[in-house]
Length: 428
Image (cartoon, rainbow, N blue to C red; front, side, top):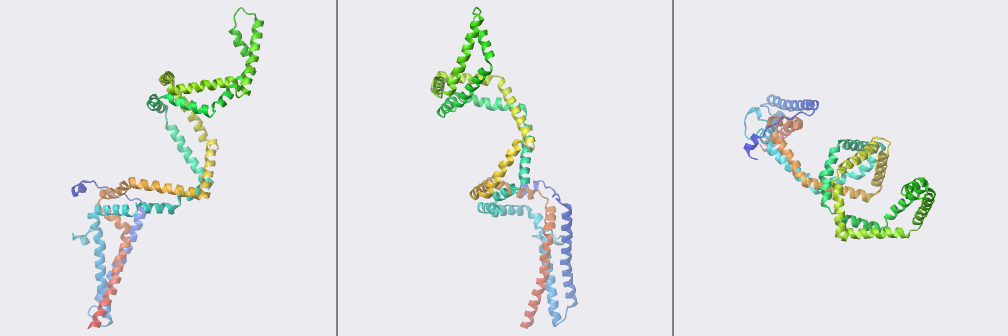
């Protein structure tokens, strides 16, 4: 980034996240500064008091002199990080305000090179034992109930956000055009072939025969009335009654034969008809065209959207009623599934390994795909900071520890001064 671009970038103030914590940091920083300055002042007093003395006092004077040098040198070094010492524009001072952008870039590269590496990520995910923790956490009934409650609340909110016009748009703009493009005859033919191959339609036939037989047994008068209405006007009533009664008996007998005989001719005829229809749907052009024509008429019917909305409303009402009932079937089922899942996580080590490996793969994928954008946030954010305020904030957080440099410099400088004076005495 060029200097011009950097200077044109707007700066933003750093908002104090916790004023109470910042005030505590300021007090700690002031205390450590007082200790460091006090040691410097003590060294200066001792130096003046022992100036020009020989013997043991000479060692004390040399130590005090070196302590002052060390204290002042380290004060300069610590102060130069955040501002110009004594306000003098000395080169290579006020490093944080001047070079915060470079520091931000270096921090970005440091994070990317040392934290967002695949081996490190996989190691940390493995060490976290996510699946085991999830299993233990879900084993607590209160936690499982919390998950179900939160999921139910989110689902209820999501269902409430879907309006009728959303369903209409979905049907008319997404589903219907897709159905128009997709030939329906091959799909119907293949599906019907599979149904016949697996004898799935026999259950439907059995259900239809049973229901027809039950209806005839329970409604003989209705059956007779329907047939008598279609009898010629000139036939005697007694003859009509006898004929309809006989037809009722024969219809019952015929349905009973179909019900009891899995190889009845009617069943075989139905199988043959359905098989021929499936073949025609797959290979006969005329049948395929009729199927496509039927599909088009169905999709063009205005009732399609209205039916979709009605179905959606019914389904939504049923779902909402079950979700909002804290003891309803949906929530109880979710609790049972979570309990089973928790038990599996705690007992099935291979499952935990697979899930942890999947979590690591997903994390690595996210880092590889978006890691650069994440670390760029560090640079872009620091570049927008005001330099002086950034220096004040950083000093507020780390300045207390940096004062130990000044304190150590004072003590170590004094010891080194004593050693140097000792060497000088021994040499002379």
